[in-house]
Image (tube, rainbow, N blue to C red; front, top):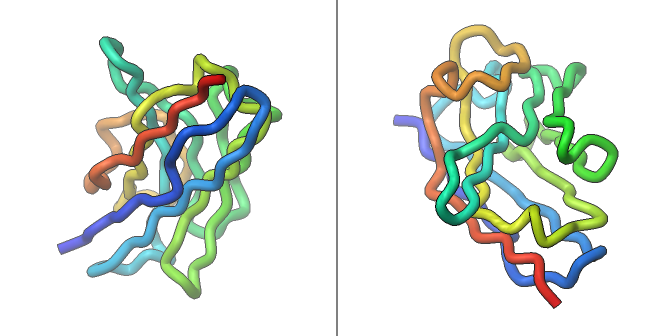
Length: 125
């Protein structure tokens, strides 16, 4: 069974930074594409970023492009989301997810088979 555990969320002021981590266990991490999604209060869950199994390809939502950076360390079974220049609109629960079959970047939530429990990010002064 593949398990994902996120960490690194918290309260940060506008303009600040956070780095989220997601550790994957129970599977073959190096073959999975990974994604980050978020869900703000009262809203649907939306795509944030995705990275291919090799790390050579990345994909971002327009709302975070230039501010967020996704990366992965296959030796540590971990995917990261570096979030800079945070805005109040970034407040949400952030989820990581694993895509097991194709290994390529995608924003399609239905392509991701396993999900973490989420970590809260709050951007407020």
